Length: 338
Image 1 (tube, rainbow, N blue to C red):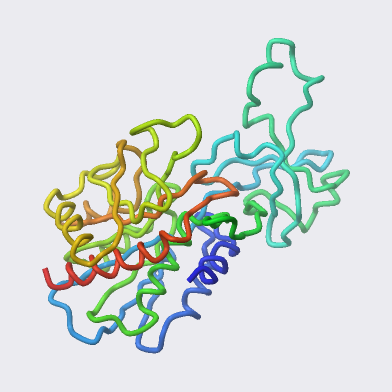
Image 2: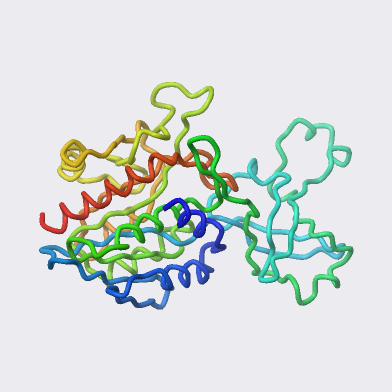
């Protein structure tokens, strides 16, 4: 499955521009699946299992990634931009990016220190002072190549190192890969997959998908912030790479069902997959809108622990891939017949 994650990570698809990811997913669906694409761009897949399920179970993973979007081109050919999704300024400085449909290679630059005021020299640069340099000498050179509204993505090669794997957009292409793996062979029970759009800008696609699919239960397959790095102690680590699937009891968008949370803990013992929970209440994902849709949907989130989330260098542990697959498969089977 690592090759599948690599393929998906390499695709470009900031929020609202998920076309390449959706096309790849459609081309990867087995013959026993049927699918549709809704008006917002969600890919909704019906999976016929070996046995008819008692309950409608929706498994969701979002296709979009954080990135940037062109807002203005200066007379001297520099490109101004703003964020699409939550991107910290710290991860932008000096980064290599690709701009627009032409994929122009650029570098994110910053006003040099000798042009900054004395009182600003020791301050971190403001995002508004950054620009993308694609090597142009004037705005005229970029006519027909770059325009306001064009997408900007990190140019970051995916690769394995040690026990880990690094790539852009692992949030949430790793989750998309898990769903594809789950249905590679016909699953035990009928399932519905929702590959959603625009999660990074406000959970927009998932609400539409859940309204259409009207599930009895939902499982959100995601990534979540791991801070198991130097300087982080105890609960500040939040979760850790190599410790298995992360199943939260609460985040900033959802208070999860205690009954479902404890049942997942029991399943971990029964089915033999590693599970951990988050030691801080932080973050949020598509569960935040899915569980509030229509009359309410009992929802579970199952996530990869991921270092350096929302950066060009998301890092997951290779051992967690199999643990995630086992966890999602076990929980889906349980909810299908709950």
